[in-house]
Amino acid sequence: MTELYQALAQGLLIGATYGLLALGMGLVYGVSGVVNFSHGDFISLGMFMCLALYSAFAMDPYVSIIITVPLMTAIGALVYIFLIRPMVGHQFLMVVQLTLGLSLVLQNGILMVFGGEPARTPSFVESKLIILGDVVLRVPHIVAFVVSFALAIGLYIMLRSTDFGRSIRAVHQNAHAAALMGINVGRVQVLTFALGIGILALAAALLLPGTPIQPTQGLRYTVITLLVVVLGGMTNFVGIMLGGLIIGIAEAFGTIYLDGPIGLLLPYIIFVAIMLFLPKGLTWSSAR
Amino acid sequence: MLEIDNLVAGYGGVPVLRDINAKIAAGEIVGLLGANNAGKTTLINSLSGMVKPISGRILFLGEDISKLTPQARVELGIVQVPEGRLVFPEMSIRENLLLGGINAHARKHRPQQMEKVIGLFPRLGERLTQSAGSLSGGEQQMLAIGRGLMAEAKLLMLDEPSLGLSPLFVQYIFEIIDKLHADGLTILLVEQNLNLTLRHAERCYVLERGQVAVEGDAETVKNDPRTRSAYLGL
Image (cartoon, rainbow over the protein chains, first blue to last red):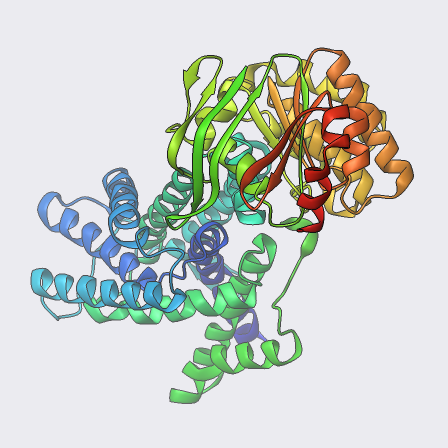
């Protein structure tokens, strides 16, 4: 029983951050039709930025976000304007190819600068634990859960009740009509992509404490994010957060209950099983 | 108010419209007629800035707007109510109306403007929180027009407002159009329905294969044999 609670708690905590990662990707897909296959490498980039800031100034990852978030947001805007925008509206596969290329560039760029050894970035909360009955929770996971949910709620409110949020939804629902309203569709697309990358910088800091990082890890995050986005029905806000929790829990169960490779496969098996029965994902139409 | 001067426009460098000349005076209601594929929608999309001109000019209130972005034109008050209505289906009526007034010029006056729109379409006011996708075709057309009015239109361009509506709704929508005109709004009415348009528009242009085939007041256009041939493609 203890193991069950432990797995559930751990999965929920990590799953919230997976949900947040996927919200960024879903938003971008919703307004530009772009699926960013370098998503995970941008998470890597955010993590290695934190590492660099720690090495240079002994800065805690939670503090370095004041630098990494604006920086990554700006990088996101530039990447969209100069690399992705010229491709959008042509071939979907061209954009996929481009972001895959970008993924390799980022990966090898990080490898060049930081080398291939797994590295760790300490944080003041890293080894702190909270014990609830028999369940042991790591403080960084709790921080990640709370911040991810707070951000998701913040994003939701932004989408629902600000002009910028309504513009994002309008572009998603009908870009032509949005332009006729006087919405600058190109600008909304750039800002959404930048926002998506900025969120990654935050998520990177949340995932970092206690986790060894290496340059090649990006693909793993990309795949997890894709699973969550697809599971959530691509653009469905609540569906995506739910998908994040499911994948997080599947991952925790896999590592706690099953040995070796089968355990690591569990999230994918559950994903395939859900998609077989709900090919449109966990849609939640009222929440769009 | 609006002057189109030798406009050539199309897609990917291929002209759809050739040498269009037309004028709309302030307060006028002008019909733009023509068969399918005559270029009506391309023309109002050129006025909205969604289609870039190849040559020629568009003057609005004396200023050349042919290089302006769609956003800048909406801010000037050139507002299109698109064919097929294109309301945002997953948003409420209220959110659709708010989006109508999102341009920098209209944004400040949205509460007052929304009251006016609700006064004009009480039916929308009764269901502000209902999603636009759940409305009937006629109600969606009301919403699309209301959304256009939220932008503080000076020139309201209606693309096929009667399309797919029941006769009763068509009558209602055209009563609204007459009312807006009586209140002094300048209207460009794009329609396939010849007789309906001739009844409501003061002047008309008939497009045929991207060119103006006939122009003049309703009576002239009605009696011109070229109008009929433009429609039948003879």
